[in-house]
Image (cartoon, rainbow, N blue to C red; front, top):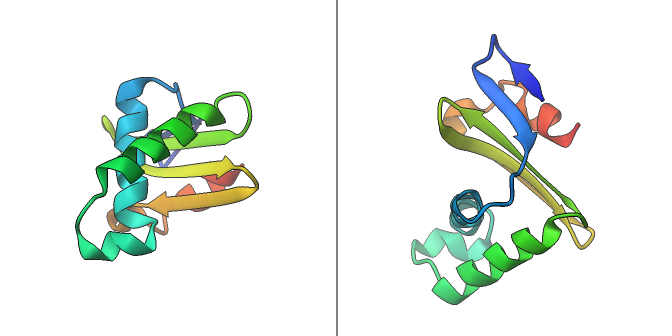
Length: 101
């Protein structure tokens, strides 16, 4: 596990549990999809994202940055695609590079 800025951030591989995957799937749906600008989440799409994230276990990479107790960034590599999202308040802290490492 890598830490940044005197233990402010913890970067780790996902634990692939339902609670964490639900949070990450919601962040992905809200911030990484073109349809996210509408402000309405599609529950079917959210469920599909959660299933894809779970299927990543052992076949791809899903890394999370935690600040205090909240996920503030993630890097997801799956099916030859990648998604990287960092909460605006935590950008320019080196998270982007460290999540890809």
